Image (cartoon, rainbow, N blue to C red; front, side, top):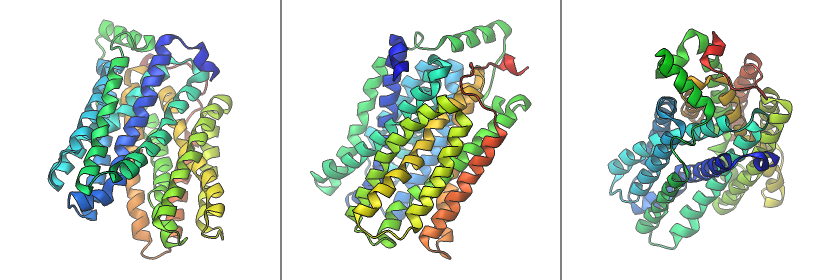
Length: 417
């Protein structure tokens, strides 16, 4: 945390705002998944309808992320960060008032638009404020908020919701989603925008240069856009292949009870918290590509061991292995923020970073679907492993085609000429 001591007051305030925003954003996104049993009982929707809502939310997040990234390039980082936080907070809160499936579907689609945008906008803002030698540590520490958000979502959907009747418990859990709205008061619109962004705006005004959402597909940037999207697809798709079926695997193949399986899944996040912080340090010390490769390989080894090792069904065997597996599964995400910030030029940094990350988030759903289809012919563990290794192999290939950027100053479109 030496970088934090060296930072000015503005950078520290933005750091805490983006960290809290990402933690609460993650909690708002995950609480729906954890509330599905209560929604089935309290709202009367089916599991199939709940799955449709979750899928629609993720696709909306991809669209919202790309749009939010372009808006922050066009109108300013801090201004759009305020808007995205307020947007997803309001619709998370509104989810608690839904009366049927169709209302909840519409509200969660709208919530997803802000949910997808917040990470990219916040990462760009902080990434442009922090010095190059500390960018990975700062953004990686922000990413660790996801583990905190996961635990908060589990708390709201479990003990908190259980204090009330089924029809009221899930509503109260959603109503807590209004809390992130308070963060907008800690962001100052124009004064928090980084100098590198202001210089780009001034240059665009002087030259009349304008960039659209399609600018990242122009010849000068097309290769970077495609490879970062491929990297995001592989890393997130591989993680989704195991993460979304972990509870089912532990109950169906390891023979654990649902409650014990839930404890195991929660502890994966604990390992992930330390994995994210470790990744953040290694990325600045040894480079972005090395760190991506180390965590991708670590994930493949530990996921295979977690799925196939002859462990007994007790927590004594599964907890230590799960902690190490979670270290790699969640830890790999810390690489996205600093690497994408350094790969895209300032004028389209928000657009490019948001597109790449959210392309992986949305397309990763294909891996989730693929595991379900493959499980009709193989054991669930085998289907999970095949798709997980496939995804991480795609990510590894992308790292060999992308340049190293650690310690590099941020670039502009003029540097690409």
